[in-house]
Image 1: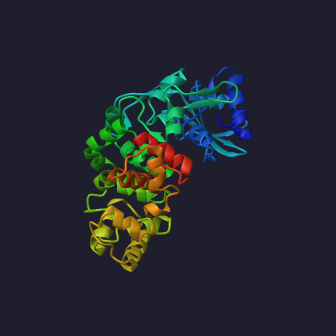
Image 2: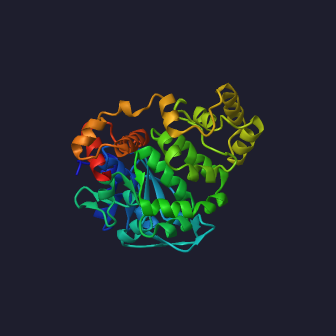
Image 3: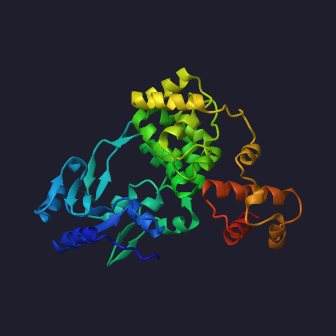
Length: 355
């Protein structure tokens, strides 16, 4: 396991809580990113301490209580704000978005069990190491997104998880596990009930991710369910990876009125709507229903750019014929989406799995 370097102010919080008799762990995305040797954007802590008990442990720090109803206290440390949340169990969900109530727990495993994906349901402590009850570390190795527990239930509880699934696929370069994808596609009707702001935020993060083009090509149904005004998804990989040009590229085939109407529904500020609409008008129209192979060729991405060739696949045991070409195209999709690294070893290993 990669060595996890804990920021000093995070270590102090863990030590103080545990010194007062309250178990505490680093949880969620920070653990995932650290195991991927990515720099975590923030460090979240989960603890057995109740919110008031957490505040009492840090009398010298200012504590923001805006999330205290759900068990979260933001401690203002020298390293910035740190969210400390009591282990919790969600009650019944309403509107396919939020639980009606939450109850606090003293068991971190109950807290991890309510999370969305296995790679986000791990906890780590500098002395106790990794706690991984749902196989998140193995899914990290496999570059796989898998729901915790029953995926249909996870998406029914919170429909935003469908878009988060696509977003994490683009950001991390992971493929979506078959059962999770099937449940997501069966639950697409729930997306219509999400607020415009939530849809906007998730899709903006997705569109700006390195694997955005691959995800739009692999899972168009998810994006189109969130943006039913679009009849198809154009190529966006040619746009600069900043939010407004990415949205402009996505809306490049829309009329000005349709684009403005969609952006208004997603609660974009008026200034940004005007900027995106102006950028749309400056983009050339993309051919509709262009085959994937042609779009890849137009973008300069072809199988000739792979670090292996058909001859390598024959040496691996492939039979001469169309299967070799299909395998190379599958590898190309993986490289474009970020699922695969364009290096001989990684490509051959994956080719062996799909042979």
